[in-house]
Length: 277
Image (cartoon, rainbow, N blue to C red; front, top):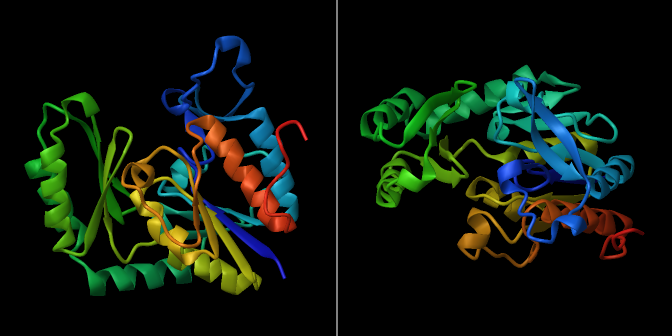
């Protein structure tokens, strides 16, 4: 039976220049591979070692990129290894099969949102009205499913975020802060539901997952085994669970460690190969 590996991407497997956390002396920094270009500029990276580990993982398991990114944003990424048959985008709103959104899955998701939470238009209107133009740089709607703001973090009023979270909670929505983005996402829109659907289709009898943000919590709890890095919302809040391993690694080296852990679990040896193995 196949093993399914559903992993978040940004700040879990791939990293922007600002998120690399290269704290070692320059001469000891790992070699990096660019895996995303946007507007002719390099945007996201992983270590060359991580790239090889991901290639090995793609050969050994059903690897499913699992992201809050829209389909368009996801398709900018050029991951090493075999092309994944399945990918989860828009926080579970789209299940890509060979690069194409499954219409039946998307219809199921949108029906559930209509039944279980406040409409996107209401949340979007609140964000536009309540956010301070002093620290808001962009306002976006993602695939007509959820909304987010791009902000200047150093100017952001953290109390405002807490108030927004309470307001959203009462309407069946979740708020997550990731880097310079503040997401407002419907609670029924989950990565875990899409992961379970892929597991059903593939017949996977073991599910592994990794992620760093609040929007990954349901995915980690749904998987048989999960990992989180030493950075991000989940680390900041001390998120834990019996099936979750909290890693100390931070930045791009955490991505490498997570892939090593995945490979170890797939191969049944409990830990992946040591660096250089």
